[in-house]
Length: 404
Image 1 (tube, rainbow, N blue to C red):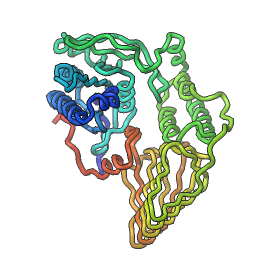
Image 2: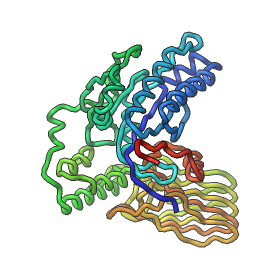
Image 3: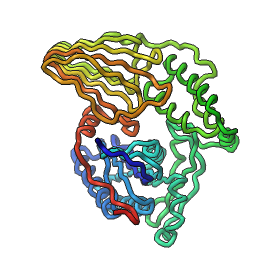
Image 4: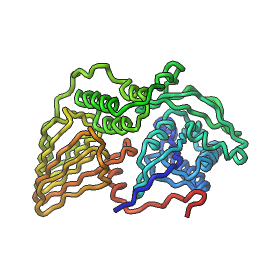
């Protein structure tokens, strides 16, 4: 069994701005430019002992043992990008976001809201800009000597996508790097909005009431399975009534039923491939038939009709893959003859009130795989999820001071 540990790390996300426009400008030279961009960034990360956790296209997800190393790596990377002689007068602009927070380490996977927050901070910036969270800034105070040539500009508190609690964001300012950028791609919070965070200490009864309301909104189709699972985790982590109120700030006061698409009760894959993904409606009872074909059922963004959903899949000379968010309770069973039925990923104990998905697979000369997808892997394709969960090992994160 993979050992799971908890640790505080600093995460750096990068993304090339206007990559489509850059592709139009460079044409056939675009792959060479992106490859060079990746080389420059990898060199900067390696010099500061950063571990590249994942890459998607032209984006990087990197982990550092100390915030100082992440900041120095970001500055070095931006300077390298600016001094590089790009073809046809082009300019490769990369936005970067840095955040420090606790995560669960399970093998080569990093699970925790800190990963999401770092990604959202990056998405709020502009090409050539380096953004830091308040948590990272606070941990840099003891490194003033090494960072004396750098400054942090307070950009105020902003509400990030999928996060109800606003955070204070800082821009890293350094010599030879631009300082002026447009407003962040995240709404700025006023003092009155921040005051809503303050409240009395929340009781267990108030948490249960909040969870009940969220469950009703999930049944009404306003929250996907993944969103409901994530908010449930935050309900039990909330300390004040203000934090509980923020979890439903984007939802109407009454979770009345809205117009919704028809539920997908039958999935067929006969002599071909079928994918059921994105935001779709999962009824209480549904059936799948796979005959000499392949089917992918992605439940991460599915809307539920209630707290329990049952899926029965019949497989004959075919394959079915099902993808569910970590933390959702799954009851997997059935019969497999001359084939296999396997589960991948961590079976995280569900929090009270999370949905239950019952899956029954009956296969003859067929295969079935259940993939439990960590919340930190937002946006990963089927192939990326499968590759990552099958991967046996990754380079270990360098130990911080005092580590072995």
